[in-house]
Image (cartoon, rainbow, N blue to C red; front, side):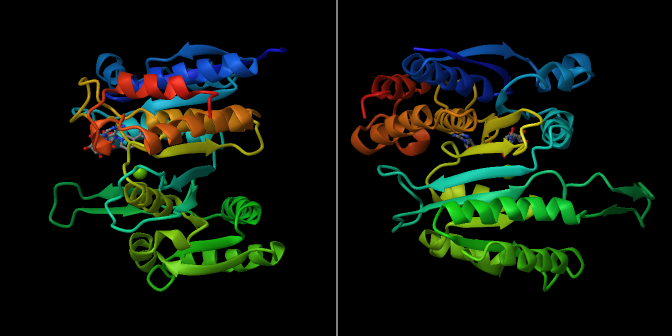
Length: 354
Ligand code: NAI
Ligand code: MG
């Protein structure tokens, strides 16, 4: 069997980030051995721990160190004692922006055997496409009159035509490959400049994708519908902030934030894309060996798909779907009693057997 070699940059990060990446790598090894895929890992200890010791989340030339890798697999960053905006803007956001990872793709699938907090959830299978490099998460703005009664803060949201067009094109194209159904998250009744602009570009984009049925929903009503009737959705596209909130909400609806995967994609492949579970570093359970590794394992499976190995990716999915559907083995967040290790072993055992 011919062997394909992939160089992966591993950034475990903080807390349970360090506990969920080894399971993801173990699963990659197992499936890689069956498909002639070899992984070479370079591990980067960029984290809040590093920040506290050295004053920066990553070295000044950090991005250059991972620019040449085929993909980046990240655990989670953030730890008490380091403000979250410092850890986020010191590591995750520079990677997403400098590597033009403008698509944040988050599949939401309720798997058989998972308990959703909602009573009757069946056939939930949709994708949230989040704009990942502009919008509300902008550096433009500032603070004035600190410490005075008239203290103030201003933060500008930035929506560019190319930035909105490319995320909408990605989302419409994806919908065309799926059920042909797209919902655009907006709030053009309240936010009267950027959101009407977004809506206009949706109309333009829709004309280029005549096979896709689409509608727009205000973000507040849409959030309610994700809770009340999640099965109706196929692809939801939203700005950076709206997409962030909706995908966490949707992940919770699907059963646990610990299961949800995410891909930060540079569709042109000029730079490496980054794959990471949606969850954070979970300081409340870190170090106990009970973190759910599925979000990281599912992210690794998305990475394989991106690297051109859809069958191998599917084997991973089939194995964990089988474990959930047919065994009681799962971590406490999913109502089980198993450790991260036991859950991972069970998934490893099923690789290639479904
Ligand atoms: P979180 O996702 O770390 O935890 C929220 C809740 O979900 C906690 O009760 C946690 O125990 C549980 N949980 C999360 N992942 C789990 C898993 N795999 N298995 C079992 N239970 C799991 O979110 P939180 O508490 O808001 O943030 C903690 C830190 O993580 C903060 O510093 C935050 O900034 C950072 N964070 C980092 C992200 C990233 O690296 N992309 C994303 C979200 C938060
Ligand atoms: Mg989030």
